[in-house]
Image 1 (cartoon, rainbow, N blue to C red):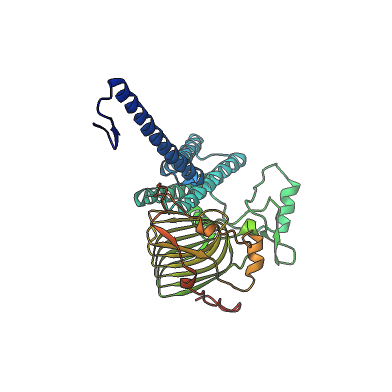
Image 2: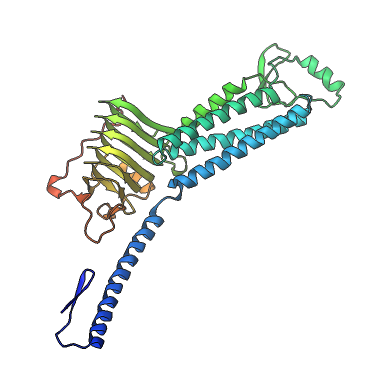
Length: 398
């Protein structure tokens, strides 16, 4: 007789009594439970590994909650400052004005930091959430500019003669005007204009909205990169040196049929929406994030490499950790082979000079089976493309 136990069968000899049948049934159930327990442990281990390797900032819920908390904090603080200004009917002393300026500057810095975090999270945020966060930050910047112009207007630029200053000092009443910047201009006895850091001098007036725009542009200038191009050759050179603490970020977005040479160190690199592109160089002292790449060839040295939604793309990489792929197919890996002048010194400073062979230890977060993931492979040595020669040191970027 045969007893069907799901996917397993227990063969029971004819004439066996009920106790023997029950014993065989219990034995088979124990085996099935052991197999299921082992499978569950393996799944949990893979989930734990994925959680440890994942950047907590890539959690959309966590990002939106943090962003909303910061936005509400800025809006609440700004409303309180406006209420204080309205209660004083615009009649505030120098000390109060300086306090308001300091508060508005703190809120402005917080807003710029929020804007920077949106840029860094653009590769994993849903498009709607990214647009909402961006528009919220723009509104905060406009509100802060209007509040600064209303509550802490700058005095108009004017010259003070030395004789007038001496008279004011002789009859000092204790009222002084504190300039917001050093180097205000005064006229001396000779009639020449000279710089002076005396806080009693008046300063020139600059519209608050213009200051906000300048600050935003300065923040955006921290990120270098190339976007929205077809059939171009780009050569990136780090002109700021290789000081690891001050390295720039590099962004490559929406490029088609382009070639990019990275001849210098960068802190992080983001490659989004590339098609039929070739990227060579490095090192990247932090992470390289590649998303939505199609039919591309990437050669880079990076401390960490994370790949999302890539198709038919080859990565020749050197990394200190296991590369991670997700939602990708037709992805292949090989060792880094590109060379350029001065590369060895940059690799040593970034601690990426030694080959770790981690390029072939790929983790596919969308594949939890024991068998090798069908989404990636190692490029056979005979099929590995020979990298091009690097541009000469004096070559200029297009």
